[in-house]
Length: 298
Image (tube, rainbow, N blue to C red; front, top):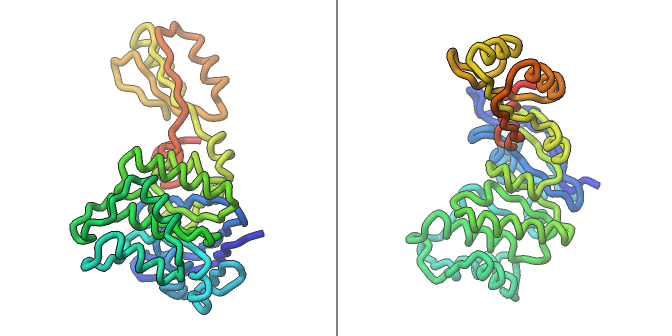
């Protein structure tokens, strides 16, 4: 069952900016990663889901409700972390958390206290004097503190967090996933996507490029192989048989991205005298560059 449905939405701001004919869904209890470079259309899509802007065409719904017409009703049942949080600078962090809790009609701040402890957040300082990372922690607390929210929509949730806090965030998402929460998360942090998401929707220049199972994406990643030959003439001869391999004249080393033809690559290399061989799997970041039109060859 799909909780979030995005069907052929277009929001055209002119000069190629916006989103164009985008369709995907998020299933009950699923964590879906929404991936793309800055300006690709992630935030525009999320703002339409929240009912802040109306699509030029197409439809968005959450739990069967129209995201624009029934935004007030929808927002009662979800946690939201915007890419740019609108703070009230005259407040301190705790006052802001209480303000958001009041809007959500929450009386118990126990969960908020747990999250503040988890993220080592002292919320007593004035918001206008807080760092980006501190403000992001407050945004995370506000998004996750209502345990009754079954849906979470998170726009670049770890922006500004240090690696330790990014890891804490991954732990938080995994614990919410175990509770059956439905989560849509835009992210540039490929490790957190790999660790938390069931599927990934990839967007580029406002258009959806792919929606794939995370396991399938992992399996499709290529090997980065660096072969060191006995001498430069062998390296040059080998590189000539693999035109897309990386090779510099006079070098003894050849670097190649190898996918389905791994067996033939290794057998061909075995025809020469190899001094050393280094193999690693593409990072998800390198893999996604294929969808952005930069890098990896299949």
